[in-house]
Image 1 (cartoon, one colour):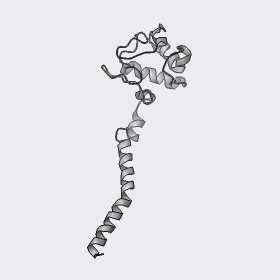
Image 2 (cartoon, rainbow, N blue to C red; image 1 turned 120 degrees about the vertical axis):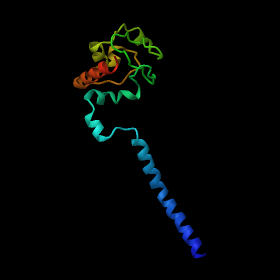
Image 3 (tube, rainbow, N blue to C red; image 1 turned 90 degrees about the vertical axis):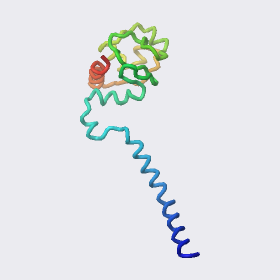
Length: 142
């Protein structure tokens, strides 16, 4: 084999060896691209930090898309199961709940106990975290 062909072969082998590393590095960059920096997370309010887990299912802005859960814009004072554009469980629709700090606190603590048959199973057992989350929702969903 000529020296030139050998050099080309070695270059290809090196590239193939580096490929998995480059792919994994690219994956890490892709996974962290939308995540807030450590500094940004440290400056978020406790309520915003608590809502981070809720973002998988809920949106806050007016006209926000309903995902696995409804959009929460104008949540306070609204009847449970009444926001347009989301298919609520019959149990939540029939609950008669009107969202305020007290009803939301009870629901977030134990959704399936407050409304048996609800589809929301995620709970916020820590009272301080719930209070921070409710304050955040009040401010962000006016």
